[in-house]
Structures are given as C-alpha cells and as structure tokens.
Image (cartoon, rainbow over the protein chains, first blue to last red):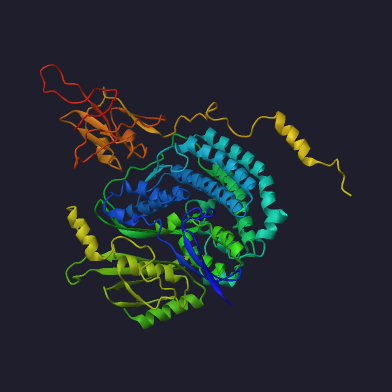
Length: 361
Length: 125
Length: 146
C-alpha cells in the first residue's frame, strides 16, 4: 500500500508549543512517527555559568509559564537541602498551597486546550474563564499571574494572612462547585466519549515499560504520585492518588478533572492544619556559598519532576538539571501515535499534556 | 567502567520492576590527570519511595553502552548526552544523530568548551 | 413526530437578549489591579544615596547606578519586575506601580554604546559652580547620552 508522509508541526493550531511529528500514513492509519524537537531549546542550563545562584531562581521560574511555580519551588528546596537551611514552617505550607493552586490552574488550562483540540470551543472558554479566577488569586497573593517570583532560598517573599487564606478556600470551593457542571460534561458527554473513548490506549504494562509519569501513568492504573513520598508536608494531608484503569484519552481527561477537585480539598486541609499567625517568619536568611549536590523530586501537574543541582563553593553553580515530566512522557506519546488514525493524532499529542518548553529548556 | 557488570545491574533493576527516572551528566573540568576533563554520569532508578543511583566517571571517548534494550525510554536521555556533552553512547534504540536540539555550538557542555567560556569572562574555572 | 413548539434555544435567546453580557466590556470597564500587583519600578531621586545595592542584585542587570555622576538608569525592557531592588533599598527610593513602563528610545546612540537604547535616566542636577551634569533631575524624561 502506498505510504504518504504528512509533517505535523511545528506550527499547528492544536499544539501549544512547537513540535514536529513526521507521520507516515497508509490510508488514514499512522504506521510510524518520527519526532523532531529542539524549537524551544534556549540553553537555560548554560546560564549557571553567568547568573549567580541567588538570582538563578528567577531563570528557573521562566523555564515554562504553566509550571512556573513548581520550578521555582524545586530550585529553592534543592538549594536549601545543599546549604542545610531550615525553612520556617509557615513558608513550607504557603508553598504547598501555591503549588496546589498551580496544579488547579494547569489542569484547567489543559482541559481547555484539550477541548479546543477536538473542536469543543465552548468548553474551552468555560475552563479558561474558571481559570481566570485562580489567576486573580495568584495576582492578589504574589503580584503576578503567571510568573510569581515568590520563592527564595530560605523561604518565601510574601505572606498570606489567615483571613485571606480562609477567603481563598471559600473562593476555590465556589469555583469547584461552579466547575462541577463542566466536569460532568467532560465525563459524560456523548460526543467527547465518542471522540476520546478507546483512543490511544496505554495498558498498564506498556505504561510501565515506557516509564510514563503523572496522569499518564495514573490513568493506566499505576499509583505513581511523588506526593505520596510525604515530603514538603504532604504526609500531613490525607489523600489518595486519582486512578483510572481504562488507559485511553478519556481516562486521562477524567484523571485531570478529578485532580482539580482533589487539589481544592488539599488546600482546604492545608489551611486547616497549618500553624496560625501571620507574624511568623517566612524566610531564613542565607549566607555563604553552596557546596555539594542533590537530587530533588516534586509532583508537577504533569508528573514527576527531578532537579539535580551541583555546587562547588563559588557563587556560580556547576550544574543545574531539570528533568521535567514531559521529557519522560515523550516516549509514551511516540508509542501511542503509532497505529492510530490520523484524526486522533492531535488528541493523543494533547493527552500527554505536552509542555515542550519545559522539555527543552 | 565495567560495562558487563553495569548492564547486569541495569537488567536487575528492570526485572525487579524499577522505573528509569533520569540519566544525568555533569562535566568535570580538565585537571591534573584528566587533561580533557571527564563526565560524571548518574543513572537513577525509582520504585515507590526508593530512589537509587548508579554512578560512573566516564572519560571522553570511552564507550558507554545504551540501556535502551532494558529501558526503552532511555533513548531521549542518551541522545541528549551525546549531543550536549559528547559522551560516546553506542547502540541507542532511536538514534536522532545529533538532531535533537540542533544547538549553534556543537557539544556546548564538553569540559574544554566550559573551561574556555569561563576563562573568556575571567572566572576561575 | 417531534413537538414543533419544543424550541429550547428560543428561551435561551430571549434570556440572552435581556441579561448582562458574560464578558467584561473593555475598555469602558477595566479590571482593577490588586494592591500587590507587580508592574513597573518607580524611582524617587530625592531619597536615593546611589549606593548601588540595587544594581548589584538585579538579576537581569537592568539598573546602572553611578555614585560619581549621581545618576540612576533603569532599562525598563530588561526589567522583569521581580522586586529585588525594592527589597534591598535601604532608603525606600524604589516603588512598584502598575502603570505601563515609560520607555524612551534613546536617539543618537553611537555604535558600540554599551546600553544602546530604551532607558529611563535620572540624575541629580548639579549645584551652581560644580561641573555640569547631563540630563534632567527627578521626573525621568528622555535620556541623554552617557
């Protein structure tokens, strides 16, 4: 049978970031996909030679706009481990709250883009309208909507008062209640079910073989969640990872919809359990230069992110590496694209929640 | 580096159900005894709460076997290692032949290149 | 046969006719910013002592402070509004405002000029008898050559 090669990307209405997949087609079926990335490689890891470690947090935040807070938090936490700095408890709780709100905003963003990818623009608008309210909370508490610049080695720069925290929880619960209708549509609408159900099935064994992380793995039934390791006060909260077993695109959508509700619940628990009193210190002053190396793992909205920092006693770090979850999920995407229909390719690419700017730094 | 023992250990990790987390490379600048510098490569595996590393110091030009037969997802890390650092990884499953990032500087993180950049701005290397 | 009078969209259309729009009517309705929103750095020449701490700590090297000339320059398009300069200033000379940055194209910049454009420049006016300085005092109008 005659084979056609259709290049998809780097510019495509469905893709949030540029990536090229050369699709080899027989009729409408994709038999092979050759990826090319490298359109957003900015060489941010080379900047360790020029930017001092105190200011490198600002570079790390700007690796990606969606996952910005968790990058900044990961850098700060890893440096605190190297420099053996004790962070005040309130600062860690605030970071947890911002991280969970970051997860809510990222999932809402993805749900909107995913809906746009299969043509449901109305749903896209609803998701992003809900997301605007989360961004307003960010602007009120940190000063920025996307890039917060609120993490510092040793703590955070701004405090949130107790009354403000209670107001945030109320606002988020209202938001969750308002979002319930949109969530119901994602889970039960027949057109979405028809478009996404049974598409791009990743079985549990395959998910393990390609080392998928985050919602990709959780939608195939693997209980993989870095928050379960209990660091950063997650061991003081009660939650179970959201699991689905079907492993198709619809299951991944459902996992992310349920994680929004889970994050709202986690924030409510955090505000109840954190120590009260906004006069408490939120930052420990840091002196001297770092020496040593460490790995640090966090759970970003897209999965497990690993930071590696090596410092040699000068003001400049020797090595900084961020292995983002999309980097780990790209083999899964390539595997899923082979064997599907051409019309399903955008859905499958979107379903790994691609953050190519994080992947390529 | 003892490639047979290394591959055997990697095979054990794969059999026990561990997941490849990251293959990380750091350049060591040229020093006495290492005129061209070296690389510290760390293969990290994760399972549940455990996070373990296999770490080796590799000299430039030394052949490093790919672990993509056991862990298929390793091909991205190994392509990056070869393209940015110049580590000689052989037998990668999906070989992108230096076209992964297409950087303007070839092998930007090779030890000699890093030293040249640091000296150009007058920093102690 | 379906009921010809079961027209769900008619009810929705009539409701949309009489209710408020779902979107904000910009520019007649502008969303107000919050008190802590980060935006532009504003500088007060009267309180500055030109210690240069802010310029040393700026992550993007957007500030140039000269003690001899008693001048302060900020390259607004390099500024990322992180606020570190505001945190370190001991004299409270820097503030954050939510106005859009005032960007002045520096004309007549010579080739090879280290900072060729887009600067906002302040300098203390010299007292009578001292060597003449360049540029204006607080108010930050178009920059002169450095």
